[in-house]
Length: 307
View 1 (cartoon, rainbow, N blue to C red):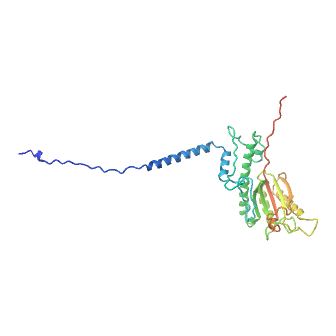
View 2: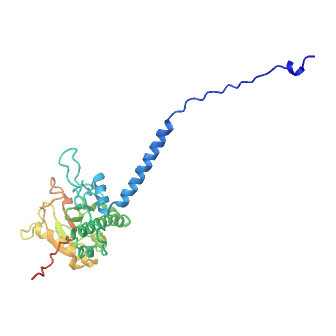
View 3: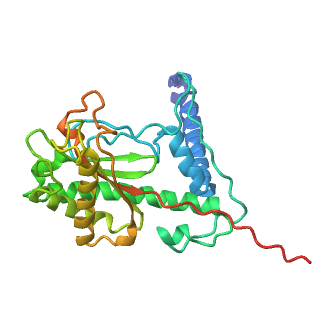
């Protein structure tokens, strides 16, 4: 008999391997973008850590230019009506970028200031420019806080919240200006006199309570409209505006403002109308209180001891 094992069929199994689709390189692009973003992020952190406060402030002005010293006058209503901050440096032509000047500090950075406000301005720092810069920066922060405090104080007063349109706050090259303004049917003074109505006296007391927290000098000025003060020839708008400014001074001193803080009390009559196109407008009748900038520190030359 033939061998049974030799008669068994031989079965050969062949496995056909499926061919995979070719791999793309998209993941490499995504990974490269991720690595680039991380590198930029850590570079930004390093730059922030290496930059001084002056450099950071200068860069912030470049991208969001706001003037620390100037403000546009506006006749809009509201507590902070007239608060308009212009760009740092007027653009001379369309598309011209604002100029930003950054003082490069010496090794070790500017000397840390221990005082604030007036103390900082009278500091004996050997670099007066750095001292003035830091003092003005703190001063502007104080002005912004004073604006917020005034708005909040009036809004929270049940008696005075309806008088928000009579309070105008703006920034000028001289400092922070706070103005109490007459309304069409709401006079600040009794007609033709320097006697405050009770509501405006209370409003002036709130203003005094806020600004007495700051060491800045105070300048008070009175303004009238273009209408004659009275039928008397010896009592004009000059006398009336001066008397009203002096009446405001008395109330402010009675509310806790130190007498030495007041640098001048003047009457402007109708020479500086809030609405030049309408000099007879009652809103031109106002009392202006300027919280002036502190005087800058000047470098003192040491005496020559050579002999």
